[in-house]
Image (tube, rainbow, N blue to C red):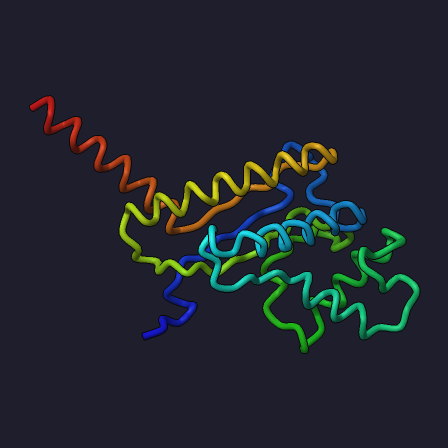
Length: 185
């Protein structure tokens, strides 16, 4: 029986949480390309990372750009001043729902502060600790490799989070402390 996505673990990769106090500048073509590169790199490692479905909003954003007939509507968006305007309009377009929660704008709406890309895993939320730990380690390695690529291009690091990964780490620490307590009793 196939489980619904709602029962599967999700991973979020977040841009814009690094030391850069300006946040994630989606207006820069290099930043747009970095998000696209993340999605492509994850897709190439789909089996290893146990990815069931990629929620890369850029696929929809690119489709939105193709539908528009404007000089700035190629990807990556140039000039940079057009990027946030097109992104804001995209997020309001009823044909592309569900993406607004993945992009954090500054209070004035003129720039992005953070952006996240979601992945639905092939592992259920209640996966056994051993499977969850192995999976979490694969994601750690993937993010480290992607950050190495970003660093080589002068980009800021990305971060990832998952409820399953947090649970697996908690259980590992709990088991470790329990064994330590039993052993010292």
